[in-house]
Length: 150
Image: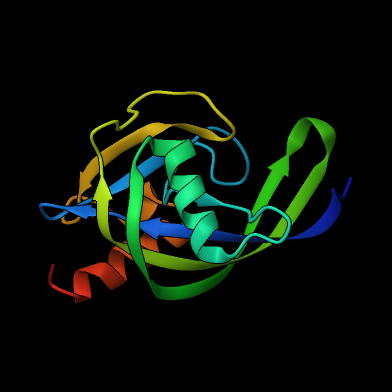
C-alpha cells in the first residue's frame, strides 16, 4: 500500500554561535530531524522580526542571551519523514535565515532539557562534526562556518 503523502512548508530563523572553534547545537527530539544536531532557532511569532526571533529562540532553547547577531546566510531543503505505523510520509520544504552571533552571554547555558523539540544544547568541535550527525541546516552552517576559518 502506498503511503499517504503530505507536503508542508516551514520557515524558521536560526543562529550560529561559535566559541573556541566549536559550534553550539541542540539535539532534536521530534520531527524529521529527530536525534540529529541542529542550530538553535525556530518559527517567528506573529509580527516578530527575524532578529528578535533569533534572540528569543536561542534564549528558550539554550539559555544564551544574544546581544548582537549579523545575518549570515539562508538555506532551503526538502526533508522527508515516514511514519510507518500510520502509512504516512511528510515532505517538508524547510526554509530559513541564519544569523551569526557576534556578542552573547553563555553564562546560563542549558545543557539538558525537553522543551518544544530540543533536548538541550552542547558545544561541538567544528572539525569533529559530519553530515550524518546534523540536520541539513546545521550541516550547511558547519560547512560554511569552516570556510570562514574561525
